[in-house]
Image 1 (cartoon, rainbow, N blue to C red):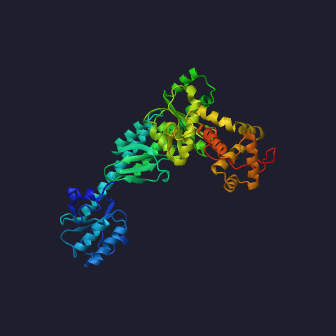
Image 2: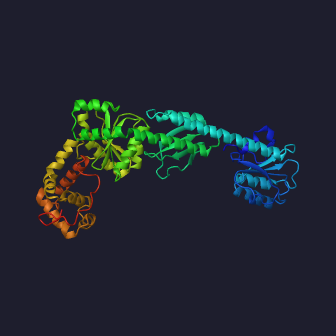
Length: 489
């Protein structure tokens, strides 16, 4: 519905002008009715144009203000008063109040019969309804002609031509639920999509928006996206398996180049890592968002993390930024051209993810490579530093199913506080003392010594930055699991 107060004022046959110029001209008019009663809101309601000769208009300013307030609260579009017959014309004070609340007061020429005005409104509304039906049919015809392999932009352009608006897709605000139509700015509206990818349909339109048609357009785009997602699932599955094999070095370099190229990926590459409890749901969103934007990428889940392999390019950046914002940070590797470097890129991305978790933003490996004055940036060198100190301890954990490496990390992160470390590990203080004693014997260090403590701290940080230790705590220790020495893992 787009017939408004402005539409009425700009129709010469209506012979109507505004006594409150510029006020409420975007208000919709769905029907018009003559009412001479003192309380028209008791009989008429939403989007009605009240026409009156002035018989029901009170004489005093205060009563006129109450008269206007009542109609405004009821959602009445406007009031039109005969230019020559008002028993009590609106006072300047009442008109000023109408302007403040945004309620339009109109004046119709004496020669224009109210029945003619009502017929004009009815014809305009009926004409709009017929046009809306035709418009809706054209939108659904555009969907039926849209092929699965076509880019979504082609459908958006066609719907935009039909609606006389500019349509686009963008990441949506996670606080707004699907289907909730909301205004972003004057002339710009958005409807969050139901399809995967956390996106919304945005519509830029000069003038009043037809909300029903906008919801039709959103449903059509949602339908097209869902069909595309279903059609691409097989390709995405094969791509996920390929990326997993590449990370595990299960595919030789030469055939890997051809396999990657078949997915539209060309060097230089970059690898991004995201970590959330719902990794599978995140993977679906990644596939949907990259597919909708028609940006080539491979994505998979490995060790409860979502991995995304993409080419370098400006079109990837907004997709990574959206993923980082909605998934508590994103770590991205340095650019690389040889797929043999993918395992190294994975360690780099995981290293960057550790610090990205702290900021909730996208962080590239190059940006955090120089954050330590004492540790190198090369992942292999970091792993060698960690191995020299933590190697025996990690071997002990692997052979006996304990978690003494994690105990050491927590103890150091809590500045060697017995109380805080035992609380974080959910163990008794004496159990923690026994564990630290066992750790000191295994690694040959004395944690009461500042020199040995510093060495252990740097080794733990090297393991984290190389990606060999997780960016966050693993689940709490199982109280039933105790190491052979009786100190507990």
